[in-house]
Length: 133
Image 1 (spheres, helix red, strand yellow):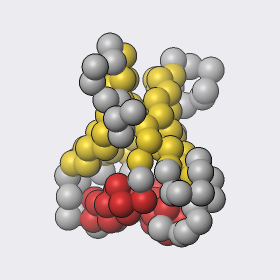
Image 2 (cartoon, rainbow, N blue to C red):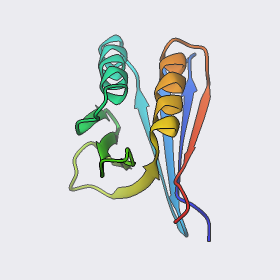
Image 3 (spheres, helix red, strand yellow):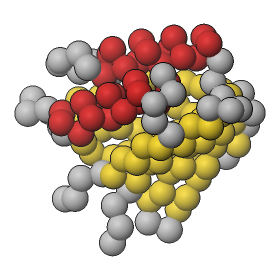
Image 4 (cartoon, rainbow, N blue to C red):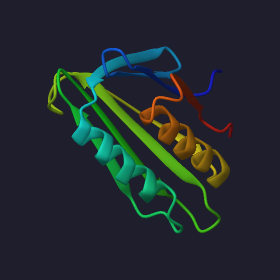
């Protein structure tokens, strides 16, 4: 059985973020154009991801497609769930794929650093895999 995976790819030339979510036999892809305002919102999301204890935080990018990420701490030992909601169209009534992956603080810290590098143009691809068990 494969672990749920969320992949982020950023095309700097077109300022387009593609998010793919895979869980078992299900797969969804959404694309969002990243504006200057979005970069600021992503930067605020990164700051919230780095705050301990983690409070529930979300990032929503909605243009032609919907990309929504929500992170929340699920226990006192630091396990985190990252939920990705992606879909065609920008409203939740449209086709949506929602997957959750469990992460620990180390993985979340690595993700926040990689996301920071990505929005500054230093990284084109990030792949997150859920923990086993």
